[in-house]
Every structure is written in C-alpha cells, then in structure tokens.
Image (cartoon, rainbow, N blue to C red):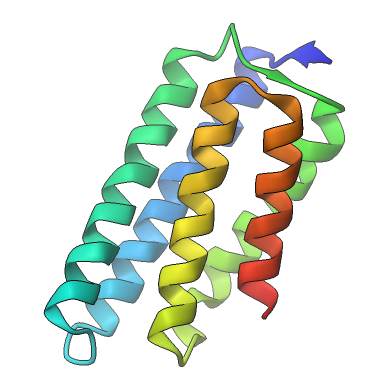
Length: 130
C-alpha cells in the first residue's frame, strides 16, 4: 500500500469531476424520460460524485490505495469509457446503477480502505458492463 502522490490524487479527483459532468449530461439528455424521482436521484448522485472529487483533493496526502498504479489505471480506464459512452445508455436504471456505483467507489476511496476500493471498482465495472 502506498499513499497517492499529489499528481495521482489530482488525476483521480479529475476523473470524479468528469464523471459527475457525464452523469449530469446523461440526466439532462434524458430529462423528458426520467420520472421526478429518477431525476432527483440522478441529481443527488451527481452531487455526491462532485463532493467525492473535492474530498479526494482535500485528502490527497492521506489517501492510500493498494497497488495504486494498477487501481488508478483501472479507475482512469473505466472513467474514460463511461464519460465517452454514458449517453448511449438506453436504460435509465442502468444509468442510475452506474452513478450509484461511482458514489460507492468515491466512498471507498475516501474511507481509505484498500479492499473496499477494489470491491467498489469491480462494482463500477459490473454496473457499466451489464
């Protein structure tokens, strides 16, 4: 286990901020399809993802990620894929599931629990690929 460098934490935080923007775009692009409850849920999830991005920056010197290089690359790869394709998702529930899994990942990172980070990253990949 190793602490994240300032550069790694910045990259991770930028991934979360970009994901929050993508979730917001998904929400906006599906505005007429989302129910009021779904719209509220997506807004809450977007806000949580933004907050985790800020928390990651604030805690950058304290965050520890097991096998950080591999985990950070996996997070970067899935973030890039999600940002590029989130608006092609046809099922609203899948969009909500992806956003929820990103929030879980943010919580795991901020909790500084390496196993929770690995599990949450798997959850993001599963929710996006199913």
